[in-house]
Image (spheres, rainbow, N blue to C red):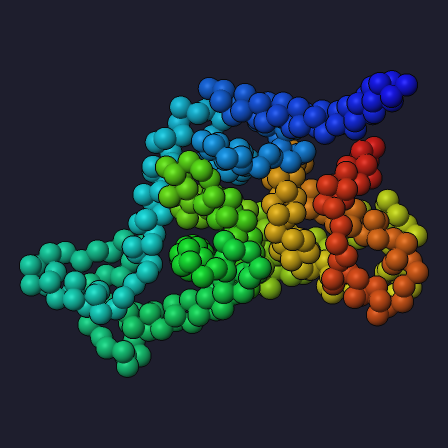
Amino acid sequence: AAVGDGAASAAGDSELESPARTKKDLYEARIEEFERVLSAEVIDLNALRKLALGGVPECRPGDVYSLRARTWKILLGHLSKDTKTWGESQRKRRRQYAEFCEEFMVDPTKVAAESDATDANGAASRNREGSLSTSQVDDDPLSTKSDSVWNKYFADNEVKDQIARDVDRTHPDIHFFNNQDGSSAVHKECMKRTLFVFAKLNPGLKYVQGMNELHAPLLWTFRTDPDEAESEHAEADAFFCFMEIMSEFRDHFCKQLDNSSSGIRATMTTLLGYLQEHDYELWDHLVNRMSIDPQYFAFRWITLMCSQEFHFPDLIRLWDTFLADPKGRLDSLLKFCVAMLVSARDLLLAGDFASNLKLLQSYPPTDVNVLIAKAQEIFAQSKV
């Protein structure tokens, strides 16, 4: 009898352990599938998108490269489908970013010194668009000339100061962005340069608070790549991927376009339209009965791609889905926001204006995988 009991116990233990082993086996198989798709000579974008929608596996000890970093670069167009072009295209872009930094990170005293040397040698001045011609440096810090190097320098410093304030507040609870070993200072300098270069290349928009939140996940993902040949160029790679994201979301940061068809108000209206279609009762409660302006919550959800609503590891997982969605990043984001609202419907329907606003501005801790599944469930049969 005792032996029988022991056998039964062993069988029970085996049954308890089986799901864990199965889950691990499935995870390993998923990694192998990613590696298979990413190692092809020509990447199957549809297959990669389908895999990434369910999340990209984390790096493991001993991995030679980051599945996520490579996947994101492909999904954001930084790497093409043809793997034979990767080496040259990345070298070209990284050189271009280095040139941007050299051109825009200006020290007037060095420009003046170079001007003196150029004049002494009789060399021609540089007149590349956006650069500081040596013919323009005959001024001083008190100059009021519109083309004064010093005037440009002081104006640039105002932008740099704004960027620095926001970068210093970026994810203070994450070691990568805030530590005592000095590496976080290096990472912050990368962010500051990237955002400043973006501002210089986009004078009509410049830098707007919140852009730092869209850049941070990219830099973290590329900088933590175990492939050192890639991670050392994380700043340049993150810059071009950030540019790609901003090409879709930039109008949300432009106040002059707030009321346009591509502005943030139109996007929030689209979000409420999705909610109205899929949960009329909740939409009616929030919009008509509570009169809660989406400006109070959806503005931040949309412009920052939910970067302040979830813990950083969850945010990274969420971006896997946003970047991979074949219908587009913005559409994926809006549908996820609908899932956030629907998942909290019981609390929202029972709440008053104050409690609902508090909930929407400080969304309760929730498993993002559950919310992603909810969004897929809600819109599975939708024509939207």
